[in-house]
Length: 354
Image (cartoon, rainbow, N blue to C red):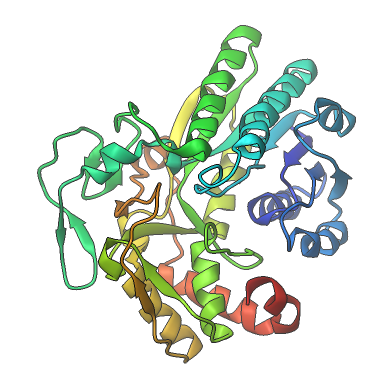
């Protein structure tokens, strides 16, 4: 697979994947397609250009924009409207047309090119009611799952692929899950190889973190720039838990999958940092304070937002068993890398992340 197109390729994950592919395979022809809607994505263009990655300005909501960037051997679908809050207080039009219609356009382009598809999905496909119904206990700094649960697919290792899918999950989660179903249909009907990664919270340098997406970068930036932060929901305790995956661990996995896409075709994997790289907001705050040397007074907003869940940790056992991959960068390493990046690019980033 020497010709590779990455949609959403000027974003955090897309650009990181493009640069990793070019570093590992200098002979590969890598093109990124992006509409540059998300502020900060334009900062990645000089980095991509310097590494020999081609840029195509386009929007996956328009099939012809995708077709104009090909043909290719592999399409990595990394584009998305990424916030779980999309559509809750306004029309869901953009999230639906980007995450579902846009994904269908990507799959149709792959069909026309007979290209493989590596689809970057999300852990948000798992339904909120089932996650909110987990039996949890409250420890000093975090919520912790009880040993016995009423549903399958949950253990102390995290949420596995057989966690129940019945229920609502947000427009964001619903559009990504619908796209997963359609990719399987495309693969079956047209014989194109495909693979799905349901990703948890990813973090690392060049992530333009916002309140609704990019938690690790947001938390670090607010410390570096000494801007307000709040523990939102669950009584304002800050005990809700997520696992975090360093972007370099993700690109390590994707490089493996690109080389052996046919071997793992038709599979869906949960991809995240797992329990060893999990933290509550309270614990994340302590890590950020250690890395930055800055202590913030965190305010409390007790009201829980729509689409939030108190605990999500990714069980990555299936992808580890299949590929031999597992995360190697710890959460303190991730927070340290982010802190050095934000500190080293203060002038560029203060207007975006501050």
